[in-house]
Length: 146
Picture 1 (spheres, rainbow, N blue to C red):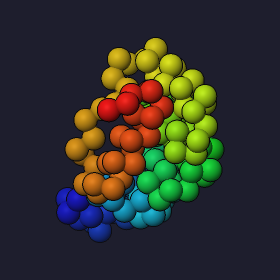
Picture 2: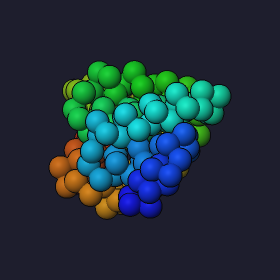
Picture 3: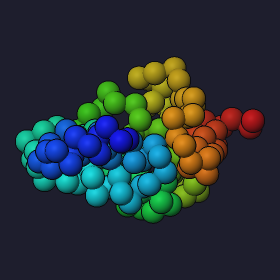
């Protein structure tokens, strides 16, 4: 995190740096800061692919428990890049926590067409509450009783 912060202090117009910082802030449990940083990257590089950025923003809304906002961003992320698995995971967990289990299971089925790993190791998420929110939603969406 310190290296990215330093790079941005040296070059505040470094769009990719703002995007990477957004991902790191998301993993560190700072969803609102993550959104700000990814939105900055989009403004600085409007022609860059937007799917991954929308996935991070959607994930941040998910962790902030703003599920409706998360769904809209995650659906756009999947539309932009249907091969990127993380938005599917966030979306399935989001639908599960919203009580929309049919939608959650449909997303899990689409996820399984891309990867056999529906419930990943989520230790990269430093906030235990965020980690459990994701994993419990995925377990519910996948129909896992464990």
